[in-house]
Image 1 (cartoon, rainbow over the protein chains, first blue to last red):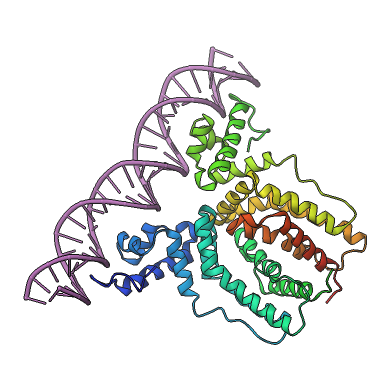
Image 2 (image 1 turned 30 degrees about the vertical axis):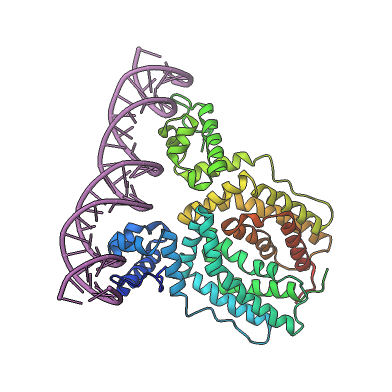
Length: 197
Length: 197
DNA sequence: CCCTTTCGTTACGGTGCGGTGCGTATTGGA
DNA sequence: TCCAATACGCACCGCACCGTAACGAAAGGG
């Protein structure tokens, strides 16, 4: 939302309100989890009217999505160490570390919303998931150009990288440790570089 | 619930009520998805009072969990063809086929509930997830005893089998095709039988 | 016969959602 | 400078769902 190219007439939206909504969303998710997040709660916590929220976002999911995208905008580096396993390990360690904090709770909220609304699920995919998948795709492509990857299909490899993460976010987020990142990066690297069946 | 060893005194529970609740839950999930499922809706659809439901189940999640466990009780075979890839392919094809039907919607509902209640997530894990993981564990152990598995850790392999499935259930259930089952079974088999890194 | 627990029915208070109407404030364009 | 458009906060509504409670009736065991 926050259409920068809306109608040019009338009173402009207050950026402080935008920011207050995002911050209140982060705060609520952080200390109450997805359950504690409601449109009314967000409005109350941010000291903003409910209408100010509804003017900007069509649904609770959109608020959370925007909060996460804005929060995580600066991150998402694509490691390039020259070694596939090292690249994957770095990316997974950083990603898992984030899942243990506020972004993890936000991702859980996005998953919960997605399960209740397939259209929203697609929006999350287009807005967030694809970018993360592309990062791993780059890592794989670079390794492939170095001749380190024999496995023909990036997509399956990427699923094997992120699938277990979402699985853990749903059922047991404590699983996302550095040790687990190590195990996964070894497994995927082994598969990617193994001789073709 | 439905404690067969409850207090033996008082008016016994009507088994027809038990069954009506389960059936109504299946029906609701089947044609409206998780969104359309509510305690009131279940009571209304089953022609039973809301108290009759609350007497049996502490939460909506418990109702869904019981409905799924009862519904899928007869299934869950563990294929044993003598070939690891074949066993995995059979299991994944059957599992994915189920996810395209009512059990898939039920699993999505369980995931949504789990995301809102970590205690319930553990209950789902203990009741359902572990049994499925054990089935894959058996397949791997048999292949291991035939000398077909070099990968040291079953747990990671099992995560690679089920992680992508839950990932797809959250964001795009249409991905769970036979072709995808084939790709995954090949990938996991390749990793399991690849030379140690 | 009495006690306990179930049954169905009905009702209540609480919460969140999505939306609306009102009065006021603030902007850019005519 | 005035005006149209949009923003703002505040208050309210109808709806759905949740969880609990009260009631009398029914069904079993001691």
